[in-house]
Image 1 (spheres, helix red, strand yellow):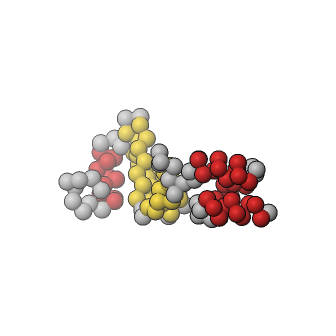
Image 2 (tube, one colour):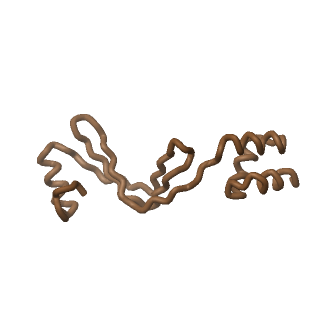
Length: 112
C-alpha cells in the first residue's frame, strides 16, 4: 500500500495507477527467494506478486510472510571438504542435513 492513500482496495489502486500510465500484472508465484549479502536467504512462500511497468522500468511488488534461512558458510564448507576429502556437493548435503553443524557434518561423512 502506498503511504497517504489510506485503505484503498486493490481495484481502486489499479485504476489509479492506470490513470498515471502504470501497467500492472499479477504474477502467479509459488515462492520468492531473496539471496542476502551475508549468505542467508529470505524465503516467502505463496506470495502475492505483481509487476508494474512504469516509464520503461519493471517494478516488482512482493507481499507475504518472510522467513530467514541461514546460508552455508564458505569457510565451513571448505573445512568439511578438507577434513573428509569429499566433493563440494557431498559437503553441502552433509551441512544441510546437519543444519550447519560442522562437527556433525564431518562425523557423518567420515562414517560413510
